[in-house]
Structure formats: structure tokens, C-alpha cells
Image 1: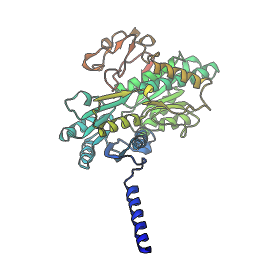
Image 2: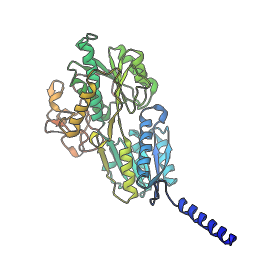
Image 3: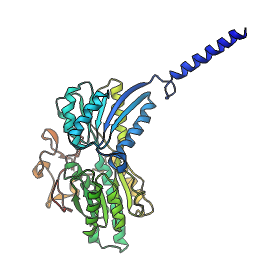
Image 4: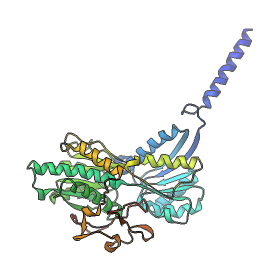
Amino acid sequence: MKKILALILALVMALSLVACGNKDDDGGKDGKTIKVGLICIGDENDQGYTYNFIRGKEAATEALKAKGINVEWVVKYNIGEDSKCEDANIELAEEGCKIIINNSFGHEPFMLKVAPDYPDITFIGCTNQASWCDDLKNTHNAFANIYEGRYLAGVVAGMKLQEMIDGGKITADKAVIGYVGAFSFAEVISGFTSYYLGAKSVCPSVTMKVQFVGSWSDATAEGTAADALCDAGCVLISQHSDNTTPATTAQSKGAFHTGYNNDMISVAPEASLIGTRIDWSVYFTHAIETIVNGGELEQDWCKGLADGAVVMTDLNTKIAAAGTADKLAAVEKDIKDGKLQVFDTSKFTVQGAAVTNSFALDTNGDFAPDSEEAVFDGAYHESYFQSAPYFALQIDGITWLNSAF
């Protein structure tokens, strides 16, 4: 009898272990697993651009896990905008990735060379513009309205500058922002213009100087550019570049700073006021869930503050101007509600002229796809016709210090 009871007990325990082994970590839901490749131009040690993508990847993994979707990521770091990117796409395809995400603007041409050979794999180019209008069904573009976040960061900067003016620390004509820009592409121009307009909305005398470095990620060049801008009289530094060196340089020169892609207060607590970033987890979650569930992914995707795709980093209340938090909340609400248009054409001029037609002032090719007119209803509608920015007007109040890249 004891032998029979022991046998029954052993059988029950075995069945229990089998049952537990079949459960997913999401609480027993029927799990689905997908392998996703991510090609990065840098690595998370930049504490900026690629680090932000890794944060997005990790947050999306958790969000999808709660939906019963398990993601097996294969990440390739430090892949340049060259033939190595083509190789990386092929390698990920051959490793069984069903989705392959390229995270840098210059990755797309190499991705597009590979995509036709793997029609059953979804290829995504982040911050790009060619995939959405090509004749391939498996290529896609994604970006976010980061210009909205940059406008808000500009408001924070402008309030600090105006506080310095009102407190007698600088005169109105010394309210000069220095901006470290990667390239003179529309994406960068759109970003520093929206930033400047945000600053100007609260500090009317502000001007800006832009120094291009010719690279998305060159820590040394970015720091050198920030140093030169400070020496040129800039009392506040911002950036569209991947590293933290503009922040640390600003602090070393006694200037203030606003960042991109990451909270940079930890590296420059006496300088960095705030930052803005794209929350890539919003798109990653959407794209992966759509593919896993057999849906059709948009060829071109773009969301902003209202959808949580653009977020602000923490405000450094120790050094921000008084009243900044309340002002920031009010302006953010107006952008989300559509009451405030970032590129309100009544707020800027180009060579002294009002902007009524984007094509009349075009110096860099079409501003919007299919010859669409981006200026209507009193505003330039950025990322309205395609996700990738196309604002490339050189507005008054902003000076380019070096040749375009």
C-alpha cells in the first residue's frame, strides 16, 4: 500500500512540474516568441542616442511580455553607416530574426540592399524617409515629433536666460545659445529651429549660433564644438549629437545646458537644465505586437507628446528659473491639445520675409513628399506628410558658424 501511495505521490509531483514548465512568465498565458534584430550605430556607453534605444528595447520587452509576447533580441553594436551595416542586416536575417530594426539615418541605404532578398522579414529604418515610399512591402520608417520636445526644452532654456537678464547677470544682447549640430540635415535644422522658437517665446532677445560637427557620434568633436561656442559668447549650450560631452563642457565653461536622448544632470549637475528624448518603446511595442498578431504595419509611423512617443527628462529644479515647472506643464498641454503650433509662421521670418509658401524659400529640395505644401493654416506642418523631418528653412536669429555637412 505504501508503495502504491508513493507511486501516486510521485506521479502527482511530476504532473505538477510539467504543468509549471508549460506556463510562461506572464502568468500562464499562451506565449508567443519572436526574434528581433537591432542594429545600433553606437553602444549604450554613449549615454545618449544608442543608450536611448536600449532603454526603449527593454521597456518594450516588458510591455510585450505582459501581453504574452516574448522577444528574443539580437543586438549589433557600433555598426557604421557603411557596408558593415549591409553585412549586419544579412547576418540577422540568416539568424532567424523576423524583424530587423536599423537605428541610424545612414543605415537605411544598406538595409534597402538586403530587404528584397528577404521578403518575409520586416525591415525598419528609424529616423529615415526612403522605405515608406519605395516599392517594397517589407520596409518601413519610424520617427517621432521630437521637435515638440525640443520646443519645450527651448522654453526651459529661454526662461533661464530671461532670469539671467532680469537679475542683471547678462544684458539682453548676451542671451546667446550655442547649439552643437551633427549635420545640416532637415532633422537637425528642424530640431534647433523648434528649440530656438521655444526659447524666443519666453526670451524675446535670444539669438543662436550653430556649430556642425559632421558626425552623429563623435564625443571629442562635440566637446570641442561646445567649447568653441562658449568662447564665442554662448551662455547656454544645447545639442543634436549623441554624447554627453557638450553637457560636461558647458559645465566646465560656466554655461548652462539642455540635453538630448538622456537625462544629463548626473554628468553636469550644475549646468544641465532638462532634456528631451524619443521613447522608442512606444513604437517597438506597437510594431512587434502588430507583426506577431499578423497585422499590417504602417509603412510610415510618427507620434509625439500626446501619444507618449516624445518625453521630457527630469527638470533640474536646483538651477532652473523660478516658475519653470508650471510654465513647462502649461506649454506641453497646449502642444498636446493642438492649441500651440511649434512652427507658427507668425513667429519667425526668413531673410526678413514672412513665410507663406515653403517652396518659395526652398534651398534644399522638396520640403514634403509628392510636392505637398507644408505651410497652411498659419503654420509649417512638420512631419505631417512623412515621419522624417523636412523643415530646412534657415530662419532669422540663428547663425550657422561653419559650412554645412
